[in-house]
Length: 113
Length: 108
Image 1 (cartoon, rainbow over the protein chains, first blue to last red):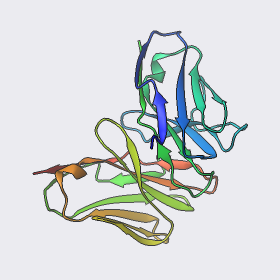
Image 2 (image 1 turned 180 degrees about the vertical axis):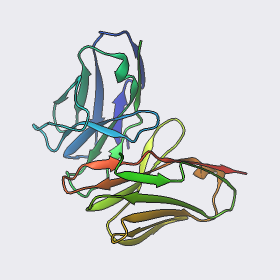
Image 3 (image 1 turned 90 degrees about the horizontal axis):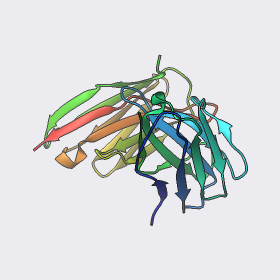
Image 4 (image 1 turned 90 degrees about the vertical axis):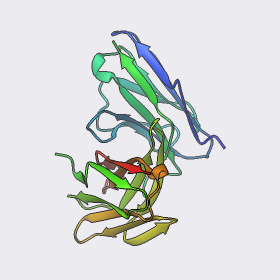
């Protein structure tokens, strides 16, 4: 029972490089989310997808793009990585938007030099 | 200013102690979540509540909507309870706002 799977688990990039973080869920959830977690701060929402075919900005969307490839997959892309994007990134999903528990992946630890 | 405040930030306990972690929030909410994050990073949802009290094993979560306050209690704490406990509130826009977390260490 995989739940929410994120790849990769760790990545080191140089400033200006691009990369895509992958997220897939096997729980038939409609809503998916990308968060970042930084020391001394709570998790912050980057982008979310309330349902297949829709995406919306969260609290900190600058420097990121997302794609809801299908119901299972929601990817996060850094087009030109900056040191300020060094963080731990979490993908989450829920059955639908609203008062539903969210299920989290194990996170991707991203360092940008 | 974070809309969700947790206390204490750090908590060290001896095995067997009763533990309380507090969460206060400043806005109207539709639900409050308690989450657990173990070393190594995985996050697990413990409770979602909008009123009253919920219990699961040794964990109890309570919420007082009028006072905008919630508590997470752990009875008979164990070293495996060592983790970061995170409070998050869901506002009218259905988005979660997270607290900074409480680092709990339970010593044997």
